[in-house]
Image (cartoon, rainbow, N blue to C red):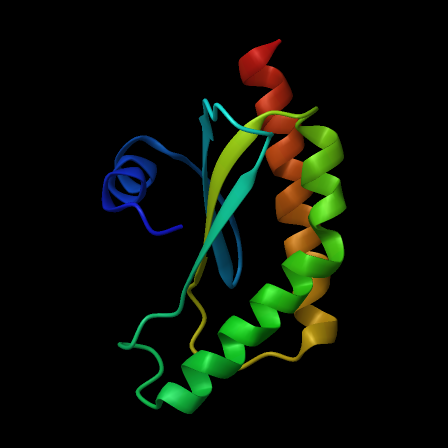
Length: 118
């Protein structure tokens, strides 16, 4: 997601879901093109000083989302959405403990989206 106004709108008016150590913000959008989900990943420099550590966590988050994005795609029924995954932990976790957290967040996204739209 590259548009600054979309990112500002996501952080100001987006809905938040938290499951330690990941916070997910989401905002439904109206996309003229085919339905799309745009994803932003963030790992604060305050918690991880070394870029190597931040990049490793972003790679893990990206891989967990890639493997489980079908949950959001099927659950949103062709709607467009902006997502932001913010890593709030202070230690590096492995992919086996991070993947169930991402799955739970995506399931909560689907259930929260169903409540708001119908």
